[in-house]
Image (cartoon, rainbow, N blue to C red; front, top):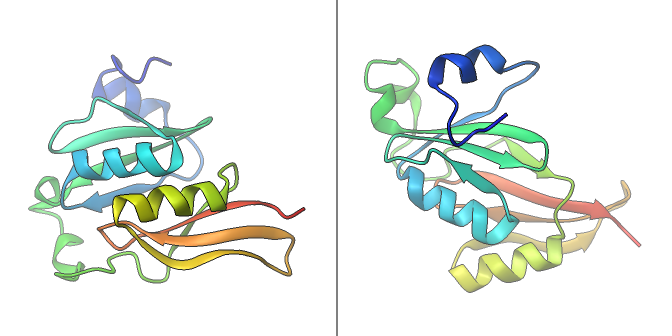
Length: 140
């Protein structure tokens, strides 16, 4: 599927399984963060919307303004963390590399890379919208 040219109707009809849609203050800034720290790709990024891919996974970003008439917008806190209680695990990302890139961008590394008893090495990185991104790899 060509995410750079697909129209909204075909894209919507193609979605299956569980979907992730993150509301953000600045779509293009969030895209830049996800690309720089985790190597994700952004498609059709505008001020209001982007399709984001991480390997074979696809999710969406929407600006707050696109939800102006939606009741969910009124539930969002004015300041981060918006995504408190949600961890977005990225099982194909090196936590040490991601943490270094995040720190270089001035992002908050909530928990530095560490080996966990559940078999993974992971870090917790907050984006400017307060979502907890968790790059994870099987530990050595």
